[in-house]
Image (cartoon, rainbow, N blue to C red; front, side):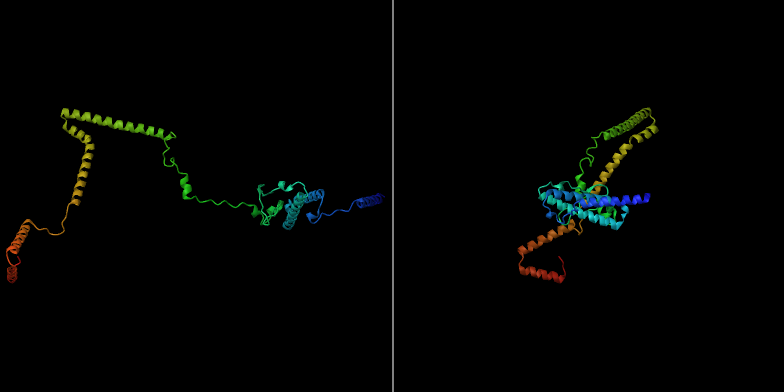
Length: 300
C-alpha cells in the first residue's frame, strides 16, 4: 500500500515540476558576438554569467586526478571564456559602462608570484594556465625561473672597488695596528736597552782588566768589543776592492804595438833629413839617390 502512495507522490511531483517549467520563459541564449547587444544591463548580465562559468571550471580544474587530457580541455575552455569576457567588457565600455579591465586578476606561478603572460597578437591577455594544469608535463618548465648566470667581472669592476684602504693607507685608523705596534716597540726597546747595558758592562770590565794588567782577559774582552768594528773594516775593504775593479775596467788597453821613444826619435830625424833634401837638392839628384838606395838595398 505504501509503495503505491510513493509512486503517486512521485508522479505528482513530476507533474508539478513540469507545470512550473511551462510557466517559465524560454531560456535565453547568450549572443555569439558582443557587438549584437545594445543594452548595458544585458551586457553586464552576460558578463556575470561568463564569470560564474569561469569560477565553476576553475574550481573543477583544481582536481589533479582528472587526467592530463581533461585538464588540458578545461584549461582551453577557461581561456576561451576569458577571451569572451574581454569582448563583453570592451562592449560595456562602448555602451558607457565601467571599465572592468583595470581591475582584472593577474596570473601567478606555482609559488603565487604574479607573472606577465604576453599575447603575441597584442590584444588582451595571453594563454593562461590554471590549477593542476600548471603541473602538466611541458607546462611546469614555463613557470620555472632560469638560473641566473653569474656575470664575469671586468677589470673596470675590479678596480672600481679598490680604494686607499686596499693598499693599507687606513690601517692606522681602526686603532688595532697602533696597539700591536706599541707592544712590538716596547719589546724592541727592551731588547736594545739590554744589549746596550751588556756592552757597557763589558766595556767597564775591559777597562778594569787593562788597568789591572790582566792581558789575557783584556784580549778576550777586546775581541768582544771590536766584533762590530770588524764588520766596518770588512765593509771598507769591500768598497776599496770594488774601486780597484772599476779602475781596472776603466784602464786603457792598446791592441796595437806602440813605438818606443828611440823609434820615435829616429822617425823624427828621418823626417827632418827629407825636408832638408827636398829644400836644397834638385829632383834629379833625389831620383839618383833613390835609385842608388834601391840598387844597394838600403831601406832608410
